[in-house]
Length: 532
Image (cartoon, rainbow, N blue to C red):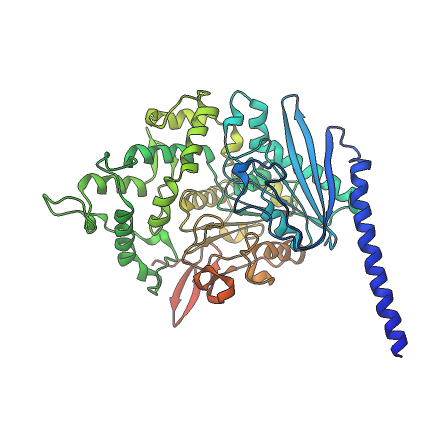
């Protein structure tokens, strides 16, 4: 009996080793064989990487502006890493990475980009293969975080707007089929910010690409967002030379005032607003007494006037441009808009997309430039088509989420888009639930930036608390597409000091819109038609 068991164990070890070597050999063969039916595609390399490998992106020559928080963590599984170059025109091309896991589930996943999108998000690739997805990402047609690549290069801009993602999916599916010898079973998408916009762009214009799309904090109205930020710079200034400028201390005072008036509206004073839309604070309470100057306890009239503009919709001659920021977001908002990278994005948008003038400066911004920017931008930077019938009719599903404390990509733009879809399709929330569900995530900053609330929802690597669908929005999508279990909530987790090693501080079920969280009878409940 013991000999039989030993023989079985040895047989299993030998079989596993053989499978391991076969996987390595198949990966190496890709470089030699190429990708069939893709004459404009070149394989840069195909390399086997065992689990726990760490990719040295700096040593590989990845653009230095792409290095940082999106670097690949130690690989969670054995993969075949494939890098490809695809020509999209005579003057443009896309770099694609396909990560093909040994433990393939049969599923395909494309991930998106962020900002001006010239960086492959390696952390997202690692996240996908950790769950057995054949996972693909692109450099969106250029390298680095600058929009300078678009200057007098319409084909490169075309890649950025839509073609890079589309090409990555089409080529990625071909690579996946050739490598595994069979078609994928289901196709998914995961992206946030620009990546959320890319997801919606696919849903609206290329409904055949995906069975399920997770679109986080989508930069819907990408063009208008930069005009709004330029307007904020004009309104608030950059330092005390502008009488309306608010220092970090002033923003802390604003936040304290807002929370003192609104925190209890959801039934519990815990430092988190469950529905920021219901907060309408009296900002005049911040006004200094007559003759007093601004201090840590009050604001001057010019500061209060500017603050009201920050919270109000931005319009130009009756044309809506962008929603104002939401109450409760003050600390993160003031930090985010003054970051050098955000200022660079605004400059790049106007210099290289709108005016084709590298000398354009923020001081030149006029309100009319917002209208010019909307007209000059390719349609894909709007992604506001509300007719999603083609995607719905082929059985596609969308999970749309947005942090209520988003510092730059204002959540009200997501609210407006949901309403736009409902009106365009003449569909009630119950009817939209068939294929489109929207979650407003309380206490959560932009994408993966954290926040005081239960912000860990499985949106990327390191931001998943468990592998249960209830705690993981990507696996929630799989459950919906493959088993018909559409979520009524997305559970979020808050770790102690944002450190999973210290354990869970609390969890919270984030309600499916239009329901909102209310603390009643000693517990959180999703309430529809709640008037807080």
